[in-house]
Amino acid sequence: MLLKFLLLFTLVPIIEVFILIQVSGQIGAVPTIVIVAMTGFIGVFLAKAQGFYTIYRFKSALERGGFPTQEIFDGACILVGSAFLLTPGLLTDILGFSLLLPQIRFYIKKYIQKIIEKMIIKGDLRIRRQ
Image (cartoon, rainbow, N blue to C red):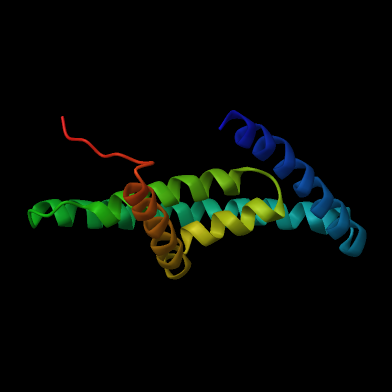
């Protein structure tokens, strides 16, 4: 697991720098910096709006007496997506926006849900009550 995180935290920045250099070579340094800055600003407003909407749905689910499973997962996706958008780079911005947009997040949630179900079936993930 440590090796995976080490690769993640070294390869992603290297890929991001490579992409930024390539884009900067095509359109120039200033437009590239503006694009990265604008995606950050737009991402902040989108994350805030999605966060408030998710909190509203969370409260509504609790008031109806249900357990807000989808809302909790949406909140986690919004949190991770926001962190990606705060990281300078175009690849992480694409991942961040993917987690913030509900239409795309729906498919990501389904994919992650299948992975978790497979892990539970294989016994790699155990859920216990306390």
